[in-house]
Length: 235
Image (tube, helix red, strand yellow):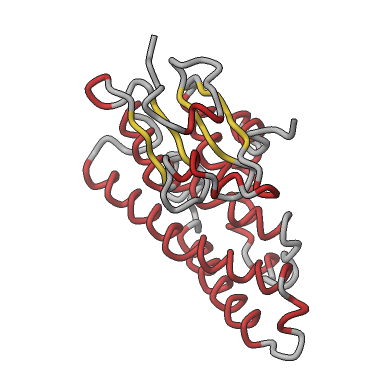
């Protein structure tokens, strides 16, 4: 049996199955990526809910695994060379899981690097820009009531990024063509989050991006996605 006692986080969130991947997360656009990937890959995992309302992501136990104090994070008891490994940052975790299993990423070098480029596009563009838009649109509207610039800036940048996805998805089922990959898993939760959680479909003019909407709906119809979008579930 794997010994995960060297990871302080396991003291606060004990593993149910020490042989399974330990997932520390919440159903946010970043958090659900890893649950979806784990479901798609059929990997056993324990899901531990990190409660933002009590700042559990800032606790010493959580920060011991992710110094940045953000979800998601994982411990794989069967990491490289059979040794446990702890990882944070959703993009890094997705790449790790894809390479661990040889799935959700092309085997050829050309396809692999192209997939990674789209993963980085989400990490450096979609995530930060959509997140800032959502902050000013939904959570800080009262603070910028007399200054529309912050919301408009991030709205316009989010629309620009959507237009890039729209062009990429022309004639394609997925970002890499016919193959569903970690590039899709890392990106569509943010687009769906802006539509569902931020309630911003009209403000971002989603109707102008039919390729994007079709792509998100195809992803949401996948059985693994239906499960992963609600992991970890509310107690």
